[in-house]
Image 1 (cartoon, helix red, strand yellow):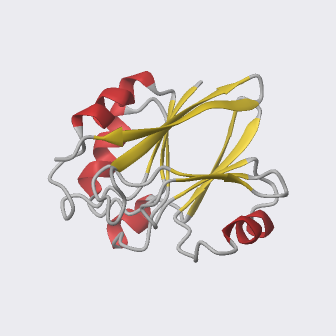
Image 2 (cartoon, one colour; image 1 turned 90 degrees about the horizontal axis):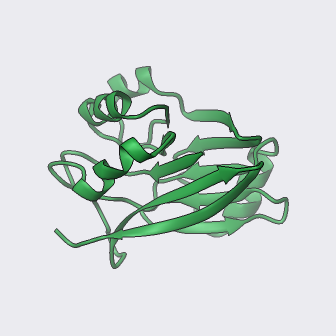
Length: 166
């Protein structure tokens, strides 16, 4: 099962549209995760229309309409793994411990907010993944997103994809 992980698209504030490379990944993904800060409803509608399955949450920059259509926390069991998605606006220091305490029932947590790619495992075994942002690199060298594979109850092939500068 192929996963596409994205967050912090901030359309149309940070970019006019999603990058072509990211859009090309949609038909290849069995499940698309979006960890919040969509900003516009059109991006939600686009991903829902083009994804086989979408797991999404709202972020701190998402308005009332997105908040009525998306949860703050989403959960999905995929290939024997328990996934969660949340925007997670807390500080980087202590993130593993904080998220492990908040989500003891998860194997993998997809989160956003910082625009900083992140791939760590908490002492509890919780895997934390932040795909960064495909449209707003902030202080990062590249805009990014992630792909991964779920097979035989394991998360494999986690890959951070760097997008060319616009």
